Amino acid sequence: MIDRYAVIGNPVAHSKSPEIHAAFAHALGEDIEYGRLVATPADFRPSADRFRQEGGKGLNITVPCKEEAFRYAAVLSDRARGAEAVNTLRFDAGQVFGDNTDGVGLIRDITRNLDVGLAGKRVLLLGAGGAARGVLGPLLAERPASLAIANRTQAKAQALASQFGGGASAIALAALEGCSFDVVINATSASLADLLPPIPRGIFASHGLAYDMVYGRGDTPFLARARAEGVGRVADGSGMLIEQAAESYFVWRGVRPPVEAGFSALHQR
Ligand code: ATR
Image 1 (spheres, rainbow, N blue to C red):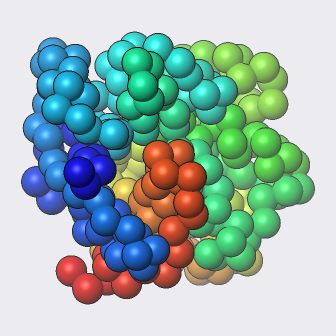
Image 2: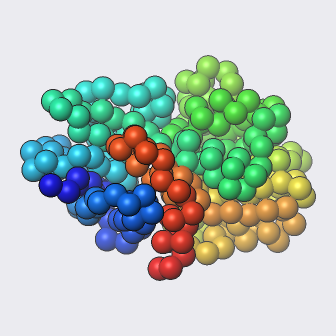
Image 3: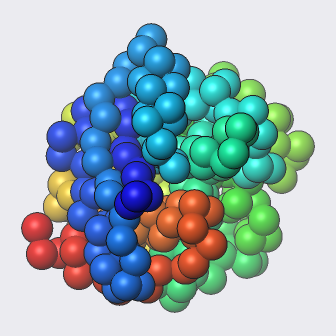
């Protein structure tokens, strides 16, 4: 029987994960089936149960089910515990293992694909929701010189910073005036609504990187602003998408797929 996997969440119709995983399997000469399951947090548990009972081997979890998947897993990786969210479930015999590959996906895309080191850099993380929480631990592990978190609702940035034990500090968006950063990561969902987070001008260093975790929307207002201000480099989240998928594939099957196969699958669409 072919090993079965799926992406679960809502919406999933336009998810690129099936194509990416099919490309990984093809490149490795493996045979897998990878589908899509629509679920809300309310029906996540029965949907995941059914998939498992039918012999499913693992799931990728997307918005808005990552917190529910976190509660669903019986055993959690450290990175899932830090993120308080699960984007990868592996169904072992009699046990559900939950992991989170988003953070490592972002780090690998920045440090390997874009070749931008984070150690010793001044990093600004915009947002304090699930997406920001998911990458904070792995960002801190890179040992930046500083990691500032700024969010529209500042109390959430403060809560997130204090939860991660002082490695990161919260800063008010207005207080960013006059500061500049080597790496600015947009982990807000503003780009999904074609909006710019309320950032002052001048925060992008001319040699720096502006990274939007959203993918497939071209130049988001955030990337357009950074480009207009002369930032050294801009990137959307497509590399993160592929890297987190590659790590999920590894978690499920113990083999590292070539990420190039994922990039060509994504760009063929
Ligand atoms: P996600 O899982 O994508 O992080 P979330 O948990 O709902 O989703 O968090 C969304 C994040 O984007 C929050 O940090 C939110 O700011 P608030 O905490 O103030 O709500 C941020 N966000 C969403 N729309 C935004 C906008 N137009 N400008 C700035 N920040 C925005």
